[in-house]
Image 1 (tube, helix red, strand yellow):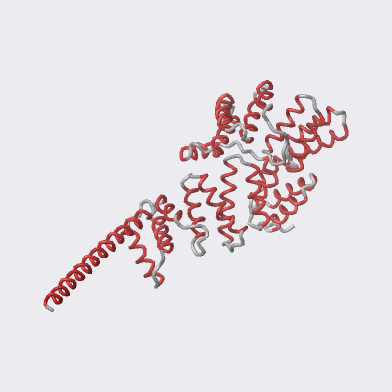
Image 2: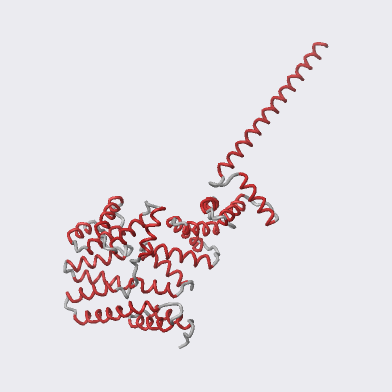
Length: 398
């Protein structure tokens, strides 16, 4: 009996020691787990944000909205606080941790980070974020009209500086379609090829942008094209040769390289580079199509030249270069009547180019003058829109 009691006591002690050991192990696991979780949360914090910053923002959110915020609420609060302090890097880092699909904060995060990218000359990131924000429209999201218009105007500015006419026209069309365009947007959309793109402002901005993103292909091609416009043709050819070697199939680079050959009247180099061009496609850069026409003229292939220039004029009726090219193609075919029509249109476009400078927010007479010329060119939509704006200007009542 005594032995049995002694055995029970020993068993009880063993069980107690086992429970204590198990409890100790559990405490260690909880402690390690909490430490791991804490470190994991810290590792997920945006660059430039400490745990103290995060907790402070969480407290401020709770105080303002009278409810605890989730991580994304706090991230938005942190981003807004950083933006107010002009700390763009931290604000962007916070916005980037908020997914676009987040119902409350996703669209705003994309829009706000795009603005900060644009304001800090990070144009490719700005373009990507603005485009992601605008894609939400296609997915059926309701977005503030002012933010949509502002995003499109920013994209128009970026594409204008980068001399990306085709991309810019798509954005301008959206502005017109949604009644968000101003009269300068109208001028750019309908008469862009008549406006001076080679400006000191554009050239300087591209150089500034390249400092932030030296590998950006759009900027490098644009920089080379500004060199062409500034007469630095050899420098442009060198830059474009490097770009071509990096991506021989990229057509925008090819188009600008052919433009440099054309401006130097170097037809042997033109022929060499043009030999690598694919067959004509409606999706190709407009500059490439225009230069196909110039090459056809050089080879006295009048029918082919006519085909290319006619196609370009369907896209861009007041394109002065293509009007002159078409006139030469018609002359080569002895089509004197058709050529005379093209010459008359060229004279009208020459007048239009001068009149465009009078298009401002407060000059109804100038807008109506351009509208009249546009109507003579068959550009009824442009004429109607210009007259619409003219009627709403000060003293614009006919």
